[in-house]
Image 1: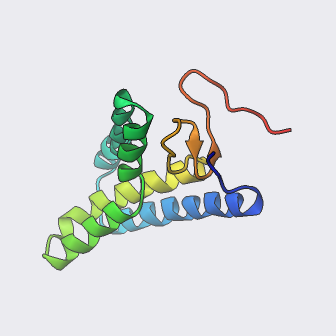
Image 2 (image 1 turned 90 degrees about the horizontal axis):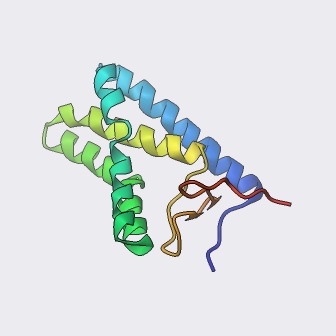
Image 3 (image 1 turned 90 degrees about the vertical axis):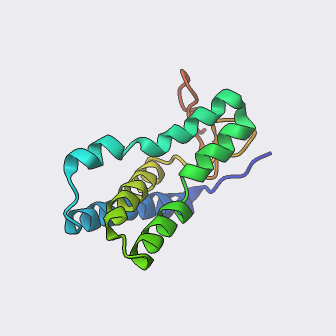
Length: 133
């Protein structure tokens, strides 16, 4: 059985995602990133969903790999450390995507099913989100 955050903590986590999205977009603007690049790459982390073709366990791993803050923060810090500030906008697009997903209530996946996330169940392909109560 999977567990998920509920109630006020879930709302706070979604607001946190919205704040990360906003901060990432503002920082991206400060970096003078191009909006065409932003639009083209914003959904790139969703390529992690392709793992679901190999089943829910692999899908959860690939999705979680592309939807946690470790990757973009590492990319940002590494780029700054080696003098490649040009990669920072890509890391900001990545964090913006993750924040957007979290704000929508799309959390990290459990291996049992696509719909099982740390922020609660979400609708799977072709299904509606179940209503509480």
